[in-house]
Length: 74
Image: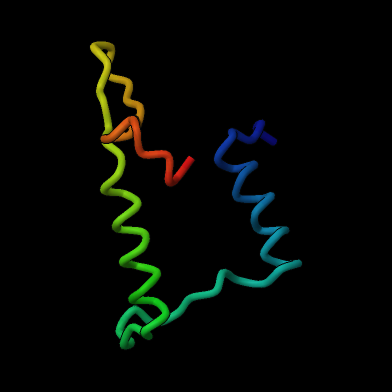
């Protein structure tokens, strides 16, 4: 039998996990948002506005605060 590559080993390992834990939970995407979810979404969007992505000349990226004096998330 040929040696398995990384993808095949990953699929075999996750197949065993699915046998133990069951399939991934899938929920409908066409339902109305609850008030709690709206508040959480607004909070997450506000958090993302506090950061910006900087690209280095080599193509790698990192995240820095837009306002270095703002310590609310650190």
